[in-house]
Length: 304
Image (cartoon, rainbow, N blue to C red; front, side):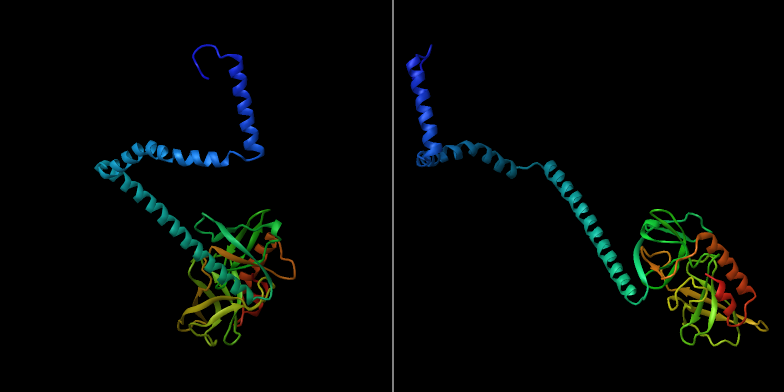
């Protein structure tokens, strides 16, 4: 039918009619499925023979792989191993963060106040200012003066807020004061930051006061800034000088001020003061501590 030269009209018509009949028979009546299956089975050896050279060349290349190719493949595998190890480290960090979240949830269960979990996203570059930035702000209801805790204790308080972030003043800052009491016997005093991230100072405690090393200090609630009963620090050392009316007491903060990544923002029933009031009350607290009595009741009433 397919001869050289012009195709006669009858043969062309015959081919078109035959093609149309085969298309209709296959599409509408499924008559050509056995024929198609038989042809595919008959052509299987042809396909196998057609792929044989490529398979043989691949097998031969694998047998006589050059040393350079092996070294290159080894380097690629080492690189992939490093990527997988990095992912494993990342998963380890995620597991640690999950544990921290569990600790925070356990800590929040012990609080009567409403709390919100926040993340520390920045640290003040000023070496004389102990401040951090958290990723909760006014849109989350955060206001100046709210207490900030981690899973272990009191970290500080909100200094001021923006729409999306808040700046937190840590309890170790030299301008910060917390009215506290000894958990064992209720002795009240003022706990000051001294610029040392790992040490605080309990001031104006008379030498006759019943206080010991390893005593736990909790917030007394005086002044209304911090709710009562939050763990703050643990007494680390007590030193007495002959003739001095007060003892020198150092305390270690319970919160991990320089390591905590996740913190709790505490919401109390009453609204907090703004940043200006915060600074004014801090100054009043330190003045009250300077003129305070042995139990520091007056200073605690004005401190933050």
